[in-house]
Length: 506
Image (cartoon, rainbow, N blue to C red):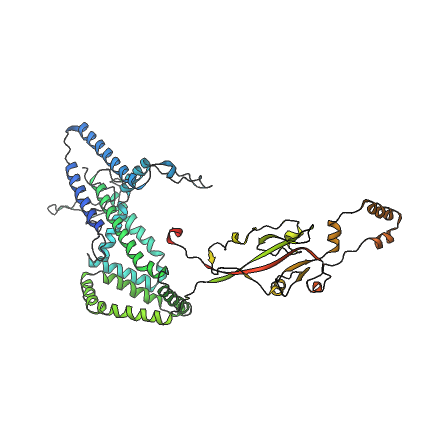
């Protein structure tokens, strides 16, 4: 194995700890066993059996091939190998770089490159853990002092990243190029540090760790623990939040919704009156002090002594309040749907023929009638289906006995209404339409043309038939018995929302 590389980032301190919620899960135990086996493999790999430069290179190549083989085997268990099952992008979006599709070789190469460069994240994470765990109280108190100044004067916040950049990046980089002379206590001629003169040391650069080095496996160890932390936190958040917010228990979720809505109203009024600086200051100090080992022991003791005995009582009180004050609709939502039975007058026998069942009344002034389109619907009552997402709440259709009301609601004109009996709504007889439909005699047409040629303009205008306005249904109640070509009546039926299964949602 290679020695530590000072130009690369890797967490060479304690491993990133894993979060244990309640108890260690089987996956945690198995991951520990896998880590132990990997450590034994690492110790065996540190002493290659072959000697010489060629033997070392051959051993490294074999290790790299073995690593590629293990990663590809792992990915093959997760991702299908059939290209037809892998979703392919339609193409790169304009203005964006083209990204390759999924490939095991590319994934393996990217994983190795990612693991070689992720050390800076783990170094930062380890330093934050040490800072909040009070490993060095002076560092933690210094952090709290800076946090206090920022909370009391938020205008200093834009200055903070600039100071961090100067102190953490520029000053160490300059000192690395202008290092101090080695101090020897026995040497009486020791000279103090001076930054004068040209740089005497090379600049510090950041390089990725070498593959199969000790830092490489340190990164893999911390990456493994971070994945376990994320899985534990994800499962804990899902188990805590999702059952209370997805309305699986509708009464509980409704109560939380009411509480959050009331909190929104209160905050919208009182937000400008709250001392946010002191609130953030107290919250930051409290969260930092909780990480102190002595404070943690006191909190655990207080939780076992005072909080746990009261948890069950608080949950019981909350459940009783929800059951008493939250009232839910027990019956499913219902709506009334309609269908119109349309019949046509037979020109030969003078009888009404069943035509269609359609969702619109197909009245004389409907867009379909004006455009000359034929009605669209189904021939049989049994073929009428409820709207999507609904199901029938009643077994049979009911005839709407209030035919006058639905005609008035739609402002339908040119119809005659039956207020008793079968409640049909007829088209009123139109003489002009009957003349257009009937056969016109050729002699009559010739006489009309001759008269039009001999008469002057005024006489022609008087002789031309004038169109009359179409009568409304009120004018057709006392008709002479002749009716139009179509008649319709309205049927209604109740529907209710259909229950959606979990398989349909997924």
